[in-house]
View (spheres, rainbow, N blue to C red):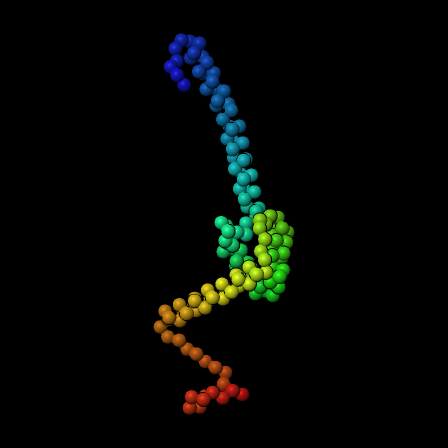
Length: 140
């Protein structure tokens, strides 16, 4: 504010401060309510993609659905219906071709992880169900 001069200006300033204090709790309550509504809205929406790339969370769910036996053709529908039944809105769709790409990427990542673990282990044991004699395996 500006300089306060005279008794009338002091009273106006005091009155203005009192009114501001009286409104402050209402302003704070409305801001908290708006923030809670925004968080609730964000929590009830799942974006399949972020900047044009399927999120890691989405890819993990897709791999889990395929592993559980869901047809690649219906993974997108199952995903959106499942989230919808939980009260979560799905933003975006996923095609069967994309599902195949995600599963293939998961396979390659698993192979790389296996190679990394094998390279960093101290010892490794391989076994088979058959019987061996002079380097020849006999299965029964």
